[in-house]
Structure formats: structure tokens, C-alpha cells
Amino acid sequence: MKILVIGATGLVGSAVCARLATGGYDVTRAVRPGKRPAADPGAWVEVDVARAVGPADWLRQLEGIDAVVNCSGALQEGMGHRMTGVHARGPRALFRACEQSGVRRMLHFSAIGVDRQQPSAFSRTKLSGDMALMETDLDWVILRPAVILGDAAFGSSALFRGLAALPLLPLMPSTGKLQVVQLEDVAETVLRLVDKAAPSKLSLEIVGPQQLEFHEIVARYRRWLGWPPAKRYLLPRPLASLLYRLGDSAGLLGWRPPVRSTAAREIVRGAVGDPTDWIGATGILPASLDEALARRPVSVQERWFAKLYFLKPVIFVLLPLFWISTGAISLTSGFEEGVELMLAGGAGFLATPSVIAGAFADIVIGCAIAWRRTARLGLFAAVLLSLFYSAAGTAILPELWSAPLGPLTKVWPILVLHLVALAVLEER
Image (cartoon, rainbow, N blue to C red; front, side, top):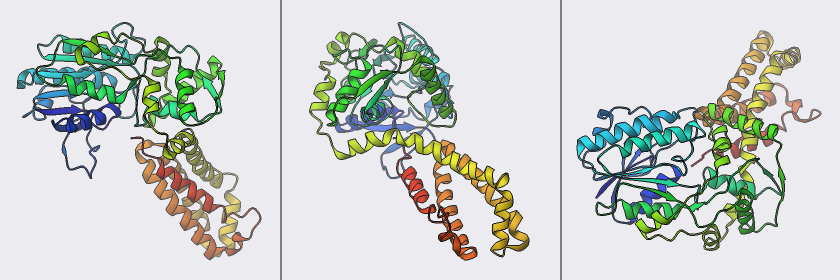
């Protein structure tokens, strides 16, 4: 069989593709335009689910396909993420295109509990996509997983690792219990249900065997990482609300933090369900979190990731503020001093325009680093500009190397921080 997997670079999609490939299936990976890995020689197609809202937008991608696995999703509205398009309009068009092209088998990822409560646009749009699929005559299976954890670190899987590195664990108020499920069990589910002979017209809750509190999950990761138990404290609601709003702001800039207002609404409900139908349809006995961690030896890269997790947002707040503030200071309170330094170095009539140009360059670089799409370009520009400032300062005013507070000496740790930012920039 030839399988089209939509959302193939995501946490679930990438695991599903790998499991189907090792299971002997011919996998075609569908990703958003520009997201195809350049080094992967496999079969890829590009399609923006949120914009592919007519059956004609899907027919070419469905040529020669025997089954479709839809793993696309978005937690919240943001840069490049439109939930109505990703969860409802795009999938509805896909389902119609499958009917028109004769593709019968459809596995569709939803989320646990959306059929019971819809506290956010995430749940409402997910349910809308589910209902559209159930109205078709396709051989459909709707998979509704709880929080998915695994070897790969993204979203909740990354958040729990990061929280496990904190000696003081902050807890959000009003969090429900979670039946976390392992990523490998989710991928195995797809392998067993994608075949034409497998049961269909099912909605399955994909949940683990343990109902755990949020802090219990973090404690298990912390114990696995080899660190002593952390002290817990409950965040005041105003502070928790501020953190969720800050996450929303980061989302508008293209970043994808797991702590956003959608998570605040959804986590009150928790993520629990009944795995009986899932076990009956697949024969899978889901692994508990304890079992999953016990068979994964902890490694130094896990400890590094956990400790770097919350340093990353600090870095990407600090660097834009550093560059924007230096530019603003150069244009205001530090303008005259900057011009005097340039004149002392022999810049002559170029002193004033040089200070202004440098200030605007700093501000542009800071804004570029803050915006996710241009962050890499902004970081490289920051490195080059820092090197230019060091070279120009050495040529014009070499005494800055020995001046009090070492203005040129401090460029080097700043350069290293930019290299760290480049190293941790990728999210998947």
C-alpha cells in the first residue's frame, strides 16, 4: 500500500512515517511549503492544509494513494497557524477529495475529550473536522490521543523534561489529570489500523493506563534524569495568567511555546479516557510512563536538553532586548557620546551618520531575532555586526580594549551567546 501522511514533520507524523516505512509501506510525506528536509530522498509533497480548502487542492496529492493518515494540527492561532483551516476546512476538502478519487482508508488524528467538552477553539475546530469525516462514506478511523510523550522532545514531551530540571517546580492552578500515552504506541496504532482489512468507522481514545497529576509526571522524569525530588509551589492565578499571555505573544511572533491560553483552557479538563475500544481494535497493551522510562537509559543529551529548555526563551528574550535597547540608547541618551567617540577616532563628517546607521542596524537585528521566521538570519547578522564593531573599534579607537569595563572585550561572550542561540534554535 502507498500511504500519504499529512503533517509528516510533526512529532506524531514523523513517528508514524518511520513506523509505516519499517512496516513495509510505501510512504509519501506531505508537509507545508518550504518545510521539506533537503537531505531526505524520500517521496514528499507540499501542501498547506489551512489553504487547501477545496477538493481540487488535494486531488493531485492523492494520485496513486491507497490510504491517508492525517496528523496535521495546530495548538493555537499564530504565525502560519489557522486552526479552522488546519482542523476543519482543509480536512473537509481532503475527505471529499478522497471520495472523488477512490481513496477509501482514512486515519484522522483528533484529540482526547473534544467530543465531550469544547473549552477552546482548538477543541471546537477539532470536533468540526471529526464530524465532517463521520459524515462521509469513507473507511474512517478517528484517533483521539491524550498527551503524547516519547523519545522525541517537542510540545508537552519537551515541557515535562524542562520542568524536571527545575529544583523548584511551579504548578499552574486548575490542572486536570492526564493519561499520557507513549509515542511508539500511537505509531503502532496507525500501523495496525491503516490496512484495508482493519476495522473502520471507529472513534478511539488513545490513552495510557495511569491517571497522573501534572506534578507526578514531572517527578517521574526528574527521577529518571537522576535528580532529587523538587519542591513544588502553586503559582498565583494572576501570575499564571500572565505567563499564558506571554506565551500567546510569543505565538504571534511565530514561536510555539506549549504554555498558551489554549493550554490553559484545555488543561482544566485534563486528558483522560477509556482505552478499551482501542485495545480491542489493535491488541496493543499501552505502556505506562514508568515502563517507558525504565526501558530508556538516561543520557547526557537528555540532561542537557532539560537544563537548556527554559534557558532558550530567556536567550531569545534577552538578545532582542539587548540589540533594540542599544540602538535606542544610541539614538537618544548616548547619541552625543557616540558621535564624540567617532570624531575622536577620525570619522569626521561621517561621525553622525555612522552612529545613526549603527543604531538602526541594531534595532533591525533585534526585531529580526524576535521574529521566528527571521531569527536565524538575525543571529547571523548579529555575529557579523559584532565582528565588524570589534574590527572597526580596534582600527579607530584601539584604547577601547583597555578602557574601564572593557567595551570591546565584552563583545566575545556576547558572540558566544549568539552561537548558543543558533545551536538551540530548531524546535523539531
